[in-house]
Length: 452
Ligand SMILES: NC(=O)c1ccc[n+]([C@@H]2O[C@H](COP(=O)([O-])OP(=O)(O)OC[C@H]3O[C@@H](n4cnc5c(N)ncnc54)[C@H](O)[C@@H]3O)[C@@H](O)[C@H]2O)c1
Image 1 (tube, protein in one colour):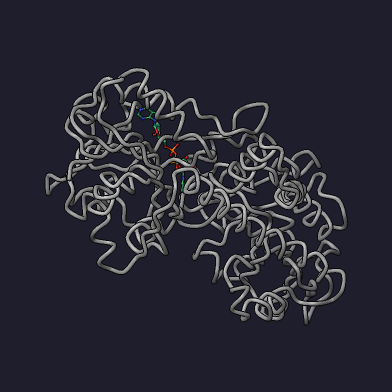
Image 2 (image 1 turned 60 degrees about the horizontal axis):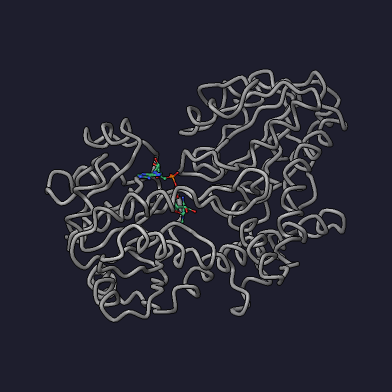
């Protein structure tokens, strides 16, 4: 099957490379020409584990190509995916659909023979109708079927997620389109991934409902974490205690600094706006967004609390800046609000991220960027784990103590055990658990170097 993938970002590039790996012939089109040049040299514009190898092997195999020319790719294609961005629209929080509609307008004149146009971008319910209207306006004669096929992959595990999805959602009632979609996903179907055929509007809504539900789960456990801190309970154990109930499930019950990333914040916001337009306000999702927004700055107050309530003229070192590990994506990362709040409070902020530094530099000013966790910790009054990269899971506490002004660790991802850290003479605070103080020495908040 011949595929055109419009948009070679996190979703388009991964999906295109995976479809090529299944044996289809895929052309990824992007209007960012420097991105296309990079990809044609086999270099990746984003960090995603395993992606470079997958792209390079399919380039060599002749099944994958990259082009800025939408015309040729669409004319040759049986299936044209739209995988362009749908960011929050400035000012009102609706999904900005201008990229999707622009892509539809560019696709329409090039259509040749029966073509299925598939929206993979996350789009509000009813967007497929508008894509169809645009296509028919530009090309009343075109033989097309417009399908919704939302994507559920997670950055950092995107290839695995694409190749082993929990389900594939296909929004169409057209038998010819179903046949094309079944053929595209046949290798996954053989692996028993369920394909759920629904109406187009239903498929569009499934994506938003899924993201809003997951965001709700995270926010729920974050609020329970706040209660645990006040009540002397342990949120990790609460999460395990409720997560073992199959009706609840253990995933997305990790308390932390609030959800961020390229999807949950904008999608929850867009769902709220869509629901308001239908006069069906979604109060729960509204509360989730408000609670989550407030939480990110609250994390800065948590850091301040560990430093006697004041970070002015103190140095705070942050480990991890991306919204989660194994990606370089900084979109809506909790670190953005945390850095802004710490700087507003008068702190000097140092930071290190294993792969997100370049992206971070373009969105975060006034930060001292460092080349490793220990250089980052140099002279710091507190070290804060913001993103749980693997390399932060086994820090050398003795070495940290040597370089830090004060041994204080604030772990916003709960990757350490409080007693274990306290044994190293650190004051340790995390999320939803009681802080622990050094077991052998005096309180490091006094200003001297504990453990020396
Ligand atoms: N990133 C994720 O984890 C993820 C997961 C599931 C769904 N989604 C959804 O998928 C969509 C794409 O997200 P992304 O993270 O890949 O975005 P992205 O910003 O990384 O990529 C979008 C790409 O589209 C290109 N583009 C825009 N207009 C174009 C046009 N007219 N012609 C050709 N190329 C064009 C841009 O240059 C960019 O490279 C969004 O709707 C998003 O919500 C994202």
